[in-house]
Image 1 (cartoon, rainbow, N blue to C red):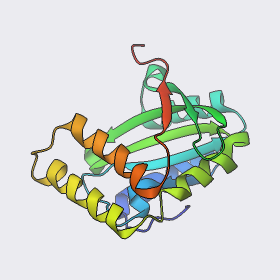
Image 2: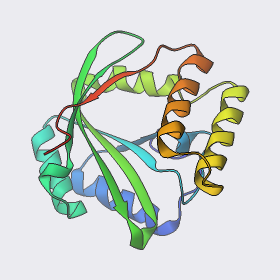
Image 3: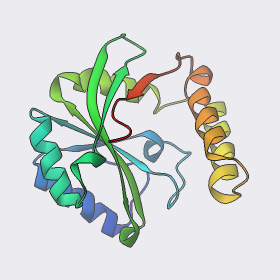
Image 4: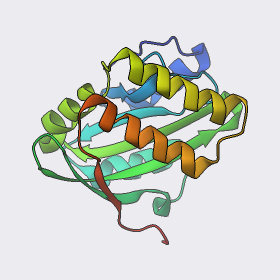
Length: 177
């Protein structure tokens, strides 16, 4: 998960390499960037950051990305395969100059095994789930006829029901800060 299934533009590769070096940690890619339903230039790139010191990592990311600390949202996630509660932070980052949209998830190292196992369950998926994801992404990203709320709902259902997993239990704790 240190590399991506889909080739990234050179400037985006440099960005991620520089961030990984700055944080002194490996960035782990998951989600559609690792599957056949990735839409270059439209799909966001999902990245996990595991660390021994979440606060320090957030401060370093805040500096590197030039964002406010309030951009990092505290999250709680119950892993469906173990029931383990995972605590961390997420930030949605957009850089129009790089045509980059990325969602970073920052977790303590103690959650690494469970989080990566959960992501792997959604990496190799049945062909019919991939086809359904491709169709809803085409309707949403290219044809603009599927509303965002419907897109998120269908995507969540495809990535649970179609691959035999329960719905995710995931909360963002500080939305209005």
